[in-house]
Image 1 (cartoon, protein in one colour):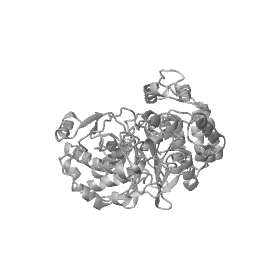
Image 2 (cartoon, protein in one colour):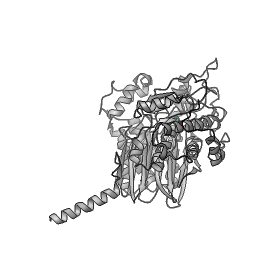
Image 3 (cartoon, rainbow, N blue to C red):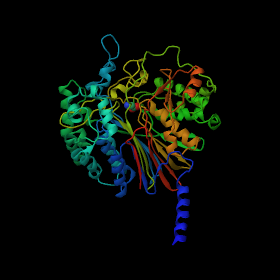
Image 4 (tube, protein in one colour):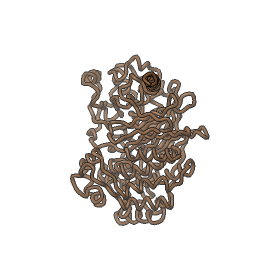
Length: 563
Ligand code: GLY
C-alpha cells in the first residue's frame, strides 16, 4: 500500500511539474477542456457552465457578455459596444466583429462645444448627448447566428436569473459605487437602482427587475428585441423627452460589421488583433515592429533602460494615433504603412537607447485623470479548439449614468471618444483631429484591443484589458512578457506596467516600480508619475495540451476557471 502511495505521489509530482512552471511567482488556473477568464466571478461561472453543458466558446462568450451587463454594470453592458476577435477551429480562420456604438443621425461635429468654442466636457461625458447608439446586443446576435451552437434563450437565461433573483454586491463593487456616489446619484434611475441605501454595504443584494424584463424581450426576439419594438420605443421616447438624439431609425438601422482582423509578426509569432475603429491593433503591431530589433532580454525586464525604450516607442505610436486613426468607413486610415516593418525602421532611426525625446516643449494643460477607466475584457477557449477575446464597454465607469425608464438599460457615454475639438484632450487625455471628428453614423475611435497570438499556425494566447488609453500599452507589455521574456501568463500579468501616450509627456509607472527606477528615468529627462492600476488583463494560454487562465489581481473580482 505504502509502495503504491509513493508511486502515486511520484506520478502526481511529475504531472504537476509538467503542468506548472515551478519558477513562476503566481500560478495560473489550469484546465483540460476549456477556460473562461472574466472580470467577474459570477460571469466566469456562467461561461464555465455553458462550456460544461457542451456549448462552444462563442456560446459561452454571449452568455458571459449578458451576465456581465448584470453583475459588472460599471462596464459589462447591453447599452454599450465593443469588439470580439475569434479563432474558429472548423474553418481554421480568424474573424473579428465590430459592434462599437455609432453616432446618431443628428450628431454634429460641434455638439460638445460651448458658444465660446471651448469644449463642454460635462456634456461630452455625462448625460443624454454623450450616448452613442449601442451595439452590444446586435454584436452578440451576429456571433450567435454565425457560430452559436446552443439556443439563444439558453445563453441569456443566466443573466435574467441574476437580474431577477439578485446577487450580492462584492466588496470591490461596493467601493466603486460609494466612490462614484457624488456623480452618479444625480441620475434618478441610477440612484433608485444602485443607491437604495447609501453608503452601499458589502454583500448587499442587488435586484434589477426592469433589466430582467428587457433581457427576456431580447431572449424572445433576438436583436429585434432591443432595436425594434417595445424596448426600442422606450429608448426613443426617453431620448425625445430628454432632448437626446437617438431615434427609432438610429436603432433600427444599427448593424455591427465583420472586419478583417489586423495581423502582424513578432519574431516567430503571429499577432491577430482588432482593426479600426480600434486604434489598439494597429499600434500593438507598430510597437512590436519597432521593438523587434532590440535584444530586450539583454536590457532586462522593467530595467530603467527597458522602460525608457518602451516610453519612447509608445510616444511615437500615440502621436500617430492622434493623426491617422478613426472610423475606416469615414476616414482612410493608412493601415498598411503604420503596420509595415519599413515604417517601424524609420521610427527606429530616431530612437536611441537611454535617451529621451520630449513629446513637445509645451505640455497640454491637462491634469492627470483620477477617474477610473472602465471597459471589460474576457477570454474564452473551448475543447473544440475555438478561442475568443472580447472587449466591450460603456466608456466611463457606469457610462453616462443614464438608465432608460422602465428598461434597466444603463447607457454608454461613448461620444466622448470622438474628438470634440482638435487639440483638446478627451477624458483619457487623448488628442485627435479630422480622422476622429464627430459625424452622423460614425464610430468613435477606441483603444480596446482584444488580441490572439499564434505560433506555427496554432493559437497560443488570448488577451485584452479595460483601461481606456492604457489598454494598448498593457496588452503590449503582456505580449512582451510572454513572448519575449517567456513568463507564465500569471507572472506576465502581475508584474508592474508603465504607460506613455505621447501627450501629456509623462511616463506613468504603476506603484510596483521602485523609486530608484523612477529617479533614473527622470534623470534622463522623462517626467514620471506614479499611478494606481488602471488596466486588468484577462488572458488564456494554450500549451502542453492544457488551458492556462489568469484573471488580473488588479481587479479583485476577476476569475479564471478551467474545465
Ligand atoms: N471607451 C474606451 C475605448 O473604447 O477605448
